[in-house]
Image (cartoon, rainbow, N blue to C red; front, side, top):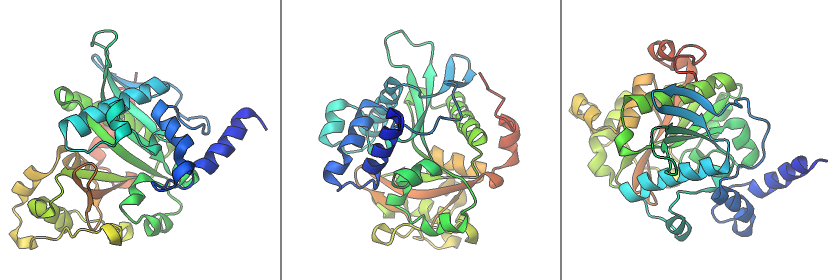
Length: 312
């Protein structure tokens, strides 16, 4: 058995299950996540680092530990400095948003090549977790909030991809950055032959009564079809149906949706039943599902069937 094979075997044992109360069992994966090193996996299907380009912006797949650390730093700047997340001591001291999943996920990054040398040029990021990797390493992050068991069993011939930890610096929240992030995701989906994307999307705030309008709109108008039904875990379930359907002002509800959720809906996504309060991040989370077959053809045509529109 080679060194890499030995390490893969050992790391698999260490990483299953991902449990916040697992004590010493999570020490090694935590060290990997903190350092930015990915636990060895099968050779990636996407080997090139640069996936697309618009002007001075490039979309890249992290290939080095320092890239992952830059993405973690960006996430800290957005989630903790700008928003209301509450850091633990390690997060606070490192000024990076770190969790165990960083060691098994792929990381998309938008970088700005026009920024001065020596300054971090990562301005946007997304974290991607393939089902094959999640299954081997303890499950999807989303499973901590939503019960995926029946959904995955119902579609056991499909390949799922989890999207998470999406964030962009304020000065870059424009069409170019969003376009590159989606170009990167679509490139990844095409290369890995993904059938469906899942994940959590968030509202700022932990009082669902203040979010009654958008939550009710999502519940009544964009709920998952029967074959894709899914709901929040019973212990964390927060009712989204807080207003009668006839009382909903759709235009006002759309204005109240975060840009990320609006973007998902435009492409063809649906939401699960029930929301979840995330006290650490100060958010109210909803489940987002997006089968590739349901994606609006307009967007597929825009990026091209092989994601060639912005290819580097």
